[in-house]
Length: 241
Length: 106
Image 1: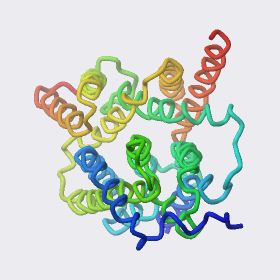
Image 2: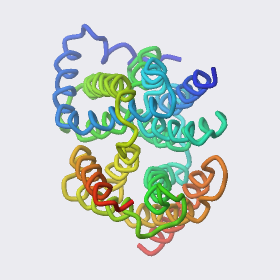
Image 3: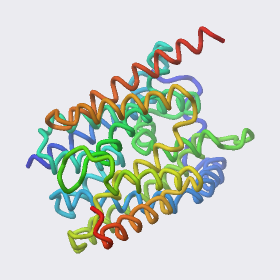
């Protein structure tokens, strides 16, 4: 199974590992203020959906997927079956497969057990920081590990604080609105190209029109229609170039 | 009990997707069509999550294009566009919604 070049790059005590790990961590620091409120909202939303603070913290540690955590909390509130909640988390987390594919070339030489750990730490933010690394970075895997480690620490502290204070927040505060607001902050930056914009519009229209479906199936239906239209558009653009 | 099933289920699904190429399918390539649709997923999913929250009234549960959450959500989107900052987006959005509630606009 092993490639011959295994074992070289990401041995934690190798001289190259530490400086690259720190460089990744340092590159991640500007993202911390954006992650803190999002992670706190995830902790609060779970508690308000009926998770105990301990369950909310465990969800963050085991699931470690912001959008999926928020959707799960919402779906628990609307009494959706567990299978459907897990299916929705599969759909929102499909993007991780895309990141996983695109990071693969950076991980050549990393042994398998360590790959599992690095895969667990994969997030939108750590991915973005790693893809934006300086071209001269000699150890991208260690750089990624540093960015992912800081993301993990920030996220886990934020959700823990949110889970612990969430129970004390008066229910008259419209805090549920923090969830769509967090999604808006995530959506706006991904609307870079026309297929993405059209995918979003179609998906929004379908999700609103199908709002009457049970168990928030409108989410899945909307996303599938949106991706299909975006896909058609990409193909059409590719042909016309 | 169901909560723990949910936690483990979401955890497994997320880990397998993250590990998909890095560990499980090492070296294999997906067809171009699949990878290009993956790039559309975040935009589509997020829009489907947001739109009903903004367009359906949180009070009556009916479609209401004049409810404060739609107006404030669009303003928050403008803030997100300008600042690219989650904290600002949250503060402006929640602050405006509190003001709207205080003024009796629900």
